View (tube, rainbow, N blue to C red):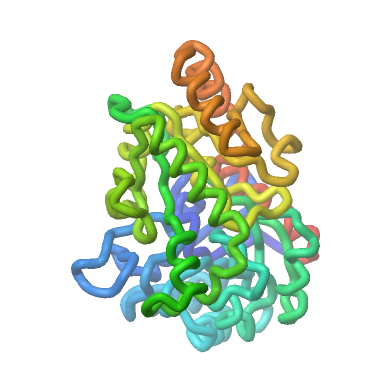
Length: 356
């Protein structure tokens, strides 16, 4: 390929503005498909989100994507999960870019054992999908939809997630939903359930999350940011998104994590942001975690509710040990899981496919 590899992305926006793309032989343009003030839901009351994924597409944003495709002529277009993004939008964008352009989607979200609705919707316009796990069995559902599958882990910006000076008000913090009560009500046919609950019946980790958080909530000062499922016994407030999430993370002495449907070596955004923010991350062990991180050096993990409680108590009672692990975890994530590292990973995947 003559000249630099040109990438048009909807996320991460830092690739276009971080000042490092040229070092890796690429030029990057970023399209704000959610407009200048992207939101998680429609209307002025929707929560502002600058996470990249999850924003609602606007007419202005889709026009920007199409215009950049026509003027920038990218070799590859990379999109992620965006509400109201349709296959026809991507087909027009690819046509504007030129016949040799490849279209790839990254899938950073709760995994499902069926093809997620947003992936199925876009599949006719895509050449490939990138996932944040190494579970070959999980990949089969994408391959069955005619998609090439590769890996692009989630990333974090060390300039955006750092140990900002916010005092820890709580023993622990968790960012996420509690789907277990919703699933129970749906299974027992007790009242109407949101349409998306049907997709969540496969969340084998939902009950374990509920058990862990319930026991920790009973014994410690737990603060939660989550949209659905949490009962009145929990100190839970509505979910917030980037850039407002950083200060919420720092309100917890320790940040907790569990996975609704664990997959082999699945690195999630919650983990990277908590570690980059300088808080100790205490999470449910997932398959292959020991291949990428070291127990009690970069973070800590548990396999049972009792172990979660014991580890949280240990690290709360030993601040020097807690801060030692938190600091080492931050250094490791900033080195290995920055957005610049993700750009290198993406270009390497394209070369493996013969695109770059």
